[in-house]
Length: 499
Image 1 (tube, helix red, strand yellow):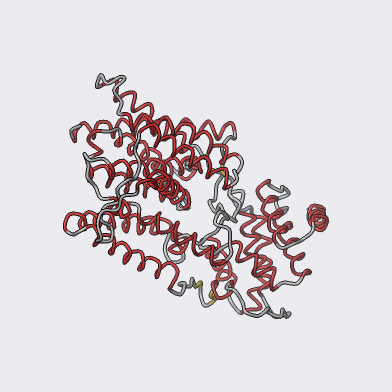
Image 2 (image 1 turned 135 degrees about the vertical axis):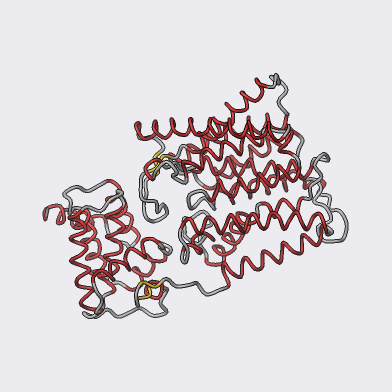
């Protein structure tokens, strides 16, 4: 396939993806299907957003491939690898759509990933059998470990891309960078439908990055991120094990370095801290960067590093022995983990009040006094999250917030506008919700917890309408700080009767 032909099919797949994603997002909005609701504990976006990105990408790929085959009179001549990959992609997407509707257990997700990976191996006879001279002691042949090791790698990459799907454009952008490197460096781009996959992802990205407006966004969902990870993993395996392309396996790690290292670091970090690997959290590399950079800046930094690591991998393969690339990858990984886990976290400051000092873990419980503003500030921050959980903050909700802000302003000697800036800054650059809850459980009395829930309901009812998202988030907070349901209902009734 010539470069101008590649460009033509890139444009066709982009247009198909744009059209399909537009139709699907509108359908989802109208029928209220596959809508991702912000909960401010794991999902920090501002608007309810359709999770139709994965479906849109796959349909665009299938339709564009049909156009490609028809225009080139290739009906029935689709490469076996691409065909089997498509066949496996359909059940993968459909099953993980269930995960988007109703969260599947991690074990069930794992079974699905392993089964579909095994299907591709058995139907194509493609798997990792030769890792090259990774350590300078000769070629590493996997032998009987080939199939289980391949499944381990594919499932690992799938989960890596699923885990890194935390800000708009990051998962699909990282996958595009990896596929472009794999495709052009190996040559797979010229004799496969890989360009159609990339074009379909670009069409999705235009919606995901909200080029058509903030209200027209689309998310991948677990179905989309697992699908993209599946494609990246198998393109890497196929290119590194096919004698036509002759790309070293270690070079593929350079192409997926950031999602892979983020996933590995997260697993070890949570294991050490005794936290479930599958639990939600804000401890990914993009969350760490968001402390100091905007969402767009964080996305740009990660993609730039991914591009640089890809070029570095190519330079090392073309100029040095394989083991040198392995050594350099370990060195690169070390620098990554030193930044991500070894250095003291940068602190966000709004005025002279340091929010990260305020919310950091304390070695001893703080004794509350009448002059301590922490309870009011905590209540205001959570109330702000509650109020904006339905997308907008009403005037009546804001009025109640300002009453609490005035109390804090008097106690700390800061202007009300400055206190509001601190609350907004915290909301924008939120640290782990669960660490916040742990601080409340450790430091706050039962009376202060009840007062907190009372204030949250008061703010939620300020506009005379308790939204579903507001109710859900308050109940979640109450449950996590160990307030009994009967107490919550009493508090809710009191707030309701006030209005």
